[in-house]
Image (cartoon, rainbow over all chains, first blue to last red; front, side, top):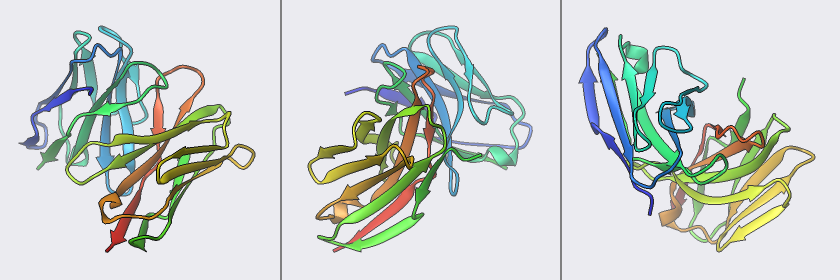
Length: 112
Length: 113
């Protein structure tokens, strides 16, 4: 069973704050993804990566940076957090382009 | 522009009934359609998938029907159980091998015992 671990599980910050969400997968998957989930919008892709050092822009990238430091680790950075970024964030990994996505348990971020 | 649409937004059925969840898409290059199931407090997990070369895929009580000409899919859950209560996402992948999965907004299914 693929394992994707996200941290922290919950995070509260203030407007303008600096936040880093972490994701680690232990299945040697090439692809990793960051999604946000909001009521009425479903899952929206923020950034994704094909491998270490690679970064691809998703559908809602504004206000977010991401970095893939190793094959296992993918980080999402909010350098100037805004209330509109209050959301449930999911990391996922997959072995290939059309292969199964394995999701983490999510990080709930609140920006006050 | 929403490329993958799902309906209804929410659906309530009684235990034992068949639940039908609908999905449609815009992009004709989409050729792989997974459905993900999400329980509260958890991440989504793959339930069943179909490629555009097939018109039907069955896995136990779950069946996908696919109409390529109309760009429509439906997920049928027969003999619905309370444990099937979850949010169901239809998704689509383009054949361009980008790795980018586009999700619909989801259908919330409630199965009453």
